[in-house]
Each structure stands twice: as structure tokens, then as C-alpha cells.
Length: 108
Length: 118
Image (cartoon, rainbow over all chains, first blue to last red):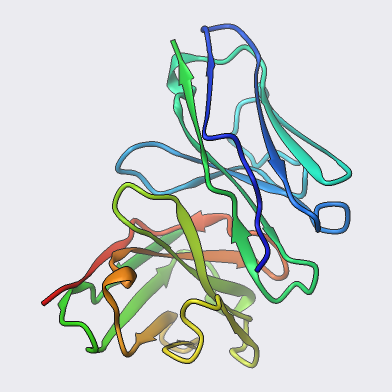
């Protein structure tokens, strides 16, 4: 079955740039999407279609994709950005949707 | 503000059944695809199932195929997940989420907890 691979954890100091990667064989043909989840809360969409930002999401959140790797970048990370981040994309057939394993971002 | 409210979770014995509901409001339900996603305690998000806007097309994760059935009633603005032959590993918070056709989910409910245990 299709898999998306993320690093388990990323740590940055406040104001630094955080980058979270997501690898998957179908990413050259399928969009990557990114969700933020804070403890006890439902996920929130922060990036869709590789690089688009929903309304209300701060500009410091951006996305990119090249080949089999997509990247979520948080420029000038804030303490409130500390959360779990998940990439999400369909497999090559489009019939199965997959989440990456999640990355815990620590801003400390 | 888009609202999605899940219900129907609870404690069920292995091999049992449960039907989850997701009541939608503040948007045109029949224009959106809908998804179920689950999260086991302390674990990551796992996609479960998807249904298109008119209910004519459904798809499932391999782990639930043949046991779970997704459906919707656009007149009642409600999404369902019928879960049969439940296993301990199905224990999770189940979220419903709406998605613009062919796109990723953009709004999520707060989830309902399903516990499968004897």
C-alpha cells in the first residue's frame, strides 16, 4: 500500500525557519496537502495543492513540491506553531488517500 | 461558519457494530465530497473512507474494506459510517471532514470516540 514518509520530529528556536518534508512516489503526479493538529483539537488545513494557503492561515506557512518530495516551510516559527503536522495525498490511482506518519514540531 | 458534528461513538465489543453520524450545517452539503478519518489514542491520522457528492462513488482504506460502509443522506445533510465486525484496532477518534470535489478535506468535525473492547 502507498506510504508518505515524514520525519518524526523537527525542532527550531522561535524566529527560525522550520522545514518539514514528505516523501511519496506519487507526489510528482499528485498534490500534497498539509494539516496542523494541536493536542485535543481537530486538524486544520494549512496548505493545499502543494503551495496554496487557505484564508486565515498566516503567510509564514508555505509549501513546495519537487519530484517525490513535498515540503512545508514555516518562516519565522512562533511558539504557537508547535503542533503535529501531517502531509496528505492520494495514491497514483486516486482511489486511496494517505496521511504521512506526522511530524512533531517543537518551537523552543 | 461550517459545522460538522459527529455522534454515535461509544464502547462496543469485538465483533460488534456501530453506526456513526455526522450532521452538517452552514454550507451546501450536497456540493461536497465527505471523508472519514480516524486517530487511535496517541497515534497519527489515518484516512478511512470517502464518498462523492451524490453518493454514487465510495472508496475505502484496505484496513476497513468489507467491514465499513460509508453513505450519505443529502436531504438530511448527514454522513454515515456503518462499522461492522469491529476489532480492537478500530479503537480511535473518528472525524468526518468535508472536501471540495476531488480536493483535500478543508473542514473537520471535533470527532467521536469509538472504543472496541470486551
